[in-house]
Length: 245
Image 1 (cartoon, one colour):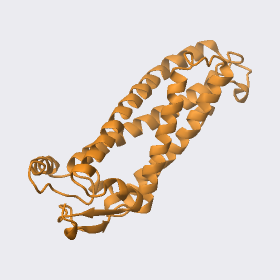
Image 2 (cartoon, one colour):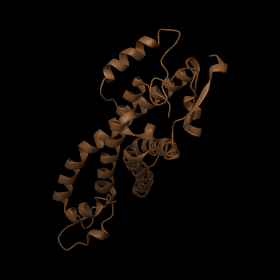
Image 3 (cartoon, one colour):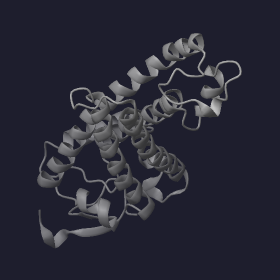
């Protein structure tokens, strides 16, 4: 890259960068505690108290994840130009832009973008869909497993046996619970748990591919993709396809 032609562009605003790193940290925490819960028997964790404690920590981190995601969805409508969904998700003429970008990669002057390149937009769309699925299914399981908000109060009220105080119910404790309704609840929440689990594994795979693609692009094409998510500035050697910010 010819350093004499480098030019810095302000791209990512502070809220977008904060979302990225909070999201990254929350996902790492969720994966860590999720794996511990998944393999708790192999790790020698057998008590109900420990099971509940692990799930509570997982859910609390999940709340941070969900609130951060909700903020990013809103910011996609009111943030700066490159934070908005119109410049982040695929739009009109997207397929042609993908073809043009892929063709340019085989030349000595690949297309450069201030925002996400067309393949990056696909990755963002896939990750956003996975994150939303994780958030919805996670909130449902938080309510049906340990009676946590936003659905926990309704679930406890549903499964409480006649004459029992829903607020007195303890997760995984049959005391005060209508066993027939509890069986229905287990049948209801089961598919959400499966979706949550397999979406998590898919997300982990996509994240690995995403990181590898960013590193590859950074090394081969430049542009400061990694530093830009810290500073907000991208450095390009040519004219960006998507114009100056």
